[in-house]
Length: 110
Length: 114
Image 1 (cartoon, rainbow over the protein chains, first blue to last red):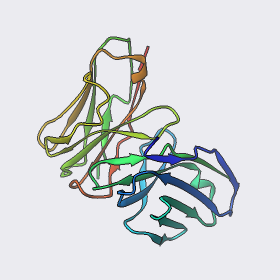
Image 2 (cartoon, each protein chain N blue to C red):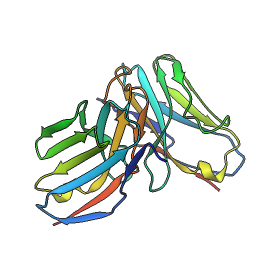
Image 3 (spheres, chains in turn orange, brown):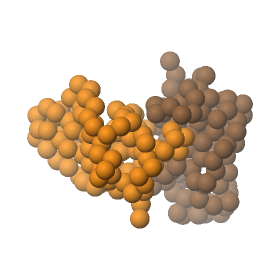
Image 4 (cartoon, chains in turn cyan, brown):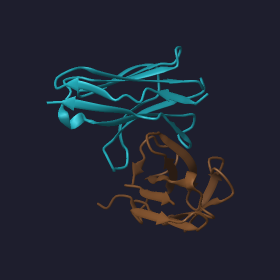
């Protein structure tokens, strides 16, 4: 069993839609949860991170963690074509070693 | 300022050859990470450095893989006797210190083993 599971998509939505991206994990010891965005042929860039269960909001992005269910989500409101990318979740016990999901490819159609 | 740079950007090699991949972290960043990303898959942790020390080498796939770092600067990832399954994008990231959630990634080296 993989440490982190993520639906690869692709996910195609119209501009302005609310997007929900999700990951599940098996290791209940994970303490830190991150979302990265990766454009084609580029390295990932950190979007959001959170340490605890609950919601964290940053502009159009909301990260949600449910430790009891071992489930994390990223919501994108008012999605834009520029949001089209692959979104990777990542987790860590100690911020030294990081475990990544396989990424969900998102396409926002104008 | 300059970000993380990696060279070469692309490398094609024959099975059985050795390759060296280079990473230049952001100046002043003491933590450096190497990952492998196979086509359509997520990032697979390989190794991290705190300064020139590598506390955790458990992610290196086999003894054909090794990495070193000069001081708190350049790192090289060496793959000996390359195999076709080594074909992937190799990504390097750096952060100010270990124990930080923010890593800055380079563009990667695309390795193809024929």
